Amino acid sequence: MSGCTFVVFPGSNLARAATTAAALPGPVDVVVVGRTADAVRSAWQGGGSLHLVGDSDREFADLPAVVAVIRELAGATVVLPADGTGATAAPALAWELGAALLTDCVAVAGTQDDRRWTRRRAGSDVLDDYRLPAGPAVVTVAGEFAGAPTGTEPNLVPHDGTNTPSTYDGWRPPNPVGPPAIADAELLVGIGRGVADLAAGSYQRLAALFGAEIAATRQAIEWQLATADRKLGDTGLRVAPRTYLTLGVSGANQHMSGIWGNCSIIAVNHNPHAAVFDVADIGVVADAADFLPVLRKELEVRLGVSTE
Amino acid sequence: MTILVCVTAGVPAATLAARGTAPRSGTGRFTLPTDQLGRHDAAAVASAVGLAADREDVVAVSVGGQAADAGLRIALAQGCGRAIRVDRSDDLDGPTVAELLAGVVGTLPGPVTVVTGVRGSAWETGQVPGLLACRLGVVYLAGVTGVDATGDGLAGHWRSAAGDAEATAPRAAVVSVARTAGNRPTVPSLHATVGAFEPDIDVVAPAATSEVPVATLIGSRVPDPARQPVRFGVGELDQAASAVATRLLHHYVGH
Image (cartoon, rainbow over all chains, first blue to last red; front, side, top):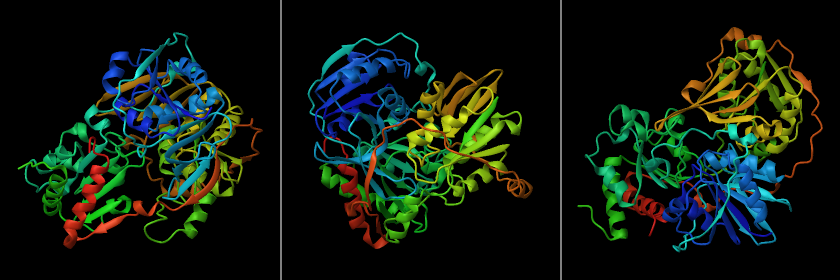
């Protein structure tokens, strides 16, 4: 009982889950819920044994069967992605397994016998280290967990789902994820009204360089700089990218509330007092129109490509 | 029928202690208010008040010491009919808070709809609503953008650019609400604010809780220096581009 059991419910992104699983310590068993074998094969490049439970996408209807499979496996720690579905399912799994619950971990360290899980304390950037109790535990992990999948095809182990009604039949996870392009993106370029004067296509070309998707503030959408399905925040989508590059975004709460998890934020804004700098890991006080060409050139050199 | 809305207030003692030791810049940034409702709790109160036909049906509950009264007074000012504080002054983990709240639900009349913020009630861990639903054995509507009363039940709504969704549930349910425009509290009037200091807050002893396994906090630290915020000015665009490119390509697939 030393490894992890990584559980991916419907609604979580499989390709991204594969990178998360690769970063977990010890032997990792993976349980994928509500996906067909074909869907898993096409999205999972992480190798290893994947236990498939149920073939419906009825949120948590298969949860009793998932619990049964987890009990069969050897992992002492059950890990889920800290996205909407994982965060909703984690308490239920902890309850069913009689396990401790630790949410939103950003790192794990230590030896097999003395493992420390780290989470960021709410309301601050202080990091707290936790030790899990000796028995079973359920942990959700945020976006900073990322490893390199092996690239090999997984060995799929099907398990039966359940048609037995359970308490969890009525459970619903947070709102349906948005367009896959944004909801699943690991890299996002956010645009605000500060990019209104940029040359047409400039930030789109930059995003394409490193495989990022475009997100936008409400003002940017009102100015028709992006379509409404790319709006983040209180009235838009909630997403959990690994890195969020903002261009001309002020950083108002109404927009930044759309960023979940502990993603790395890079802010470019000409206003040195913009709120976005309070949460940014890297801040560039400059006009986006001045900075973008320099950044694009740097990326092109490093990637050995040209967008001219 | 009762609507129980769960709130917390102030910053946990451990976080306040950390504030005293953290450097002034770069680390120790605090975003939670110390004397207001947490942002998720505020959304919960707004939803609960909107859900009730009569304000007397809405009961605000908090687990904490006397400092938690501040949040309960704000909830009263924003339309809750009465307030209950479960008297536990230590910093509590999510499972224990859920156990204590479940004890309060058992003392209330009729089917009880529990409303919380999606990450409310235990310092944004997001643990309480799900655990509470398990503990009570009721339906859990997670992260709704709106909730309505429908005859003898509830209808939860999820709205996103991808489309709308709706689910129904019996009145005995746990509903966690997302922070959206529809769940924003209105600023209470001066009359309501002053009036909120009149009613007594029912202080109840914590019910006996079953033993729940919890993770042990073994230490706290400021972030890795590599994660410290860095700032570049207009004259440093080349250095800025280098730093930004490094960070962007860190997660670039195939790089």
